[in-house]
Image (tube, rainbow, N blue to C red; front, top):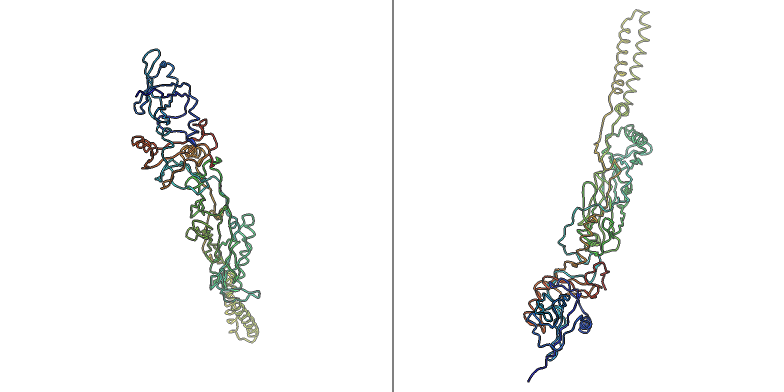
Length: 518
């Protein structure tokens, strides 16, 4: 029985698809696909059966006309209603009214509705959520130099006061008392006495005079040896006896840009493209913005009131902990203060009573000897003259002892530990938002815009999550359905290599469009 030729071939121009399957169009339905390709430039009717694997079609048009088209579709109506889609690869001239059109089947469009994507290992895809922290798999691009995008200093280590650590307390009456106290929960066998002297460059001269007066109070009470140390203490963390340790909170804002550039892909607002560095000058710790579970990151700051004070910064609601003590960072070494003791003043405090007694005895002896010498001179007793001379020598010795004490240089005590950051009023915790340079951020953002995020997960691929296009790359995917094995093998190769599905045929290749999540 003869079969009437009834196959159709449609030639299409300006079809925005490429033979390498870098970009393709994802139609919502078979009817939407048919509608898009139903308006060809040329339709060739009543042709003989077109074999899909033959790779060529004999067309009754000139080669010059066929050169204008880049895509074709054909249907063998007598056998099936299925349309086959193909890329025109070349055109061979036969005569002025005929040519051979060579083609390669577009397996993506031809079998688009003949299979479903199975669960497989997804290497890359456009994510269905884009909150910073949802997608943290490493990416293959170069970060470049990291910069400090913004920084600020903590609010609680700006004021410092000199504290006197002593084993003895001087009461209002100038009397000495043994010291023992509890500061911030720590039992200490010493007394920590805030001097009220703030370390402010504008008032260094007055501060020095005040410190000298406090030290002299101990010297006058013959208690200078009970001064164990003088040290600098953050004023906010000073505590009284039996008072709990002071605690403060620092609140930060998560960044929304990189070196002034606001990325489309929020993954760039996570580590390592953007992170928080906390620097004390001696220590540095890095924190990932995405590990803070609250909208505004928080840190608790605790300070110990001891001879070697220390302040620690503890991240809150970070990396699975309400307070993450494992990732705390400490700031210490606020500096010891050296001091000097007036040697004469100390000598006088120690020997005042004894010296006054010696002075009294020497003066009395000299006066008595002088009286005896005077009466003896007229009575002929010259032994009293010798006593006068001896008493004068004793008086001179007492005065020499005082003069020697007066001439001694002040005696230095304590330790001098310098800290440049403290001297420059830079001591404390510096919060630094580290980020990529804007140029590198733009390059990375463009890459993620085109190719989505690294996924590296076993899942069902998602190719409909975005408004304009979805990229997908798989590994070892298996395509099953009403698809020939050779086409299935080619589809597997395409998906494993990676391709981009566009949702609007008129927008293919326009990466300036809003491709946010649907």
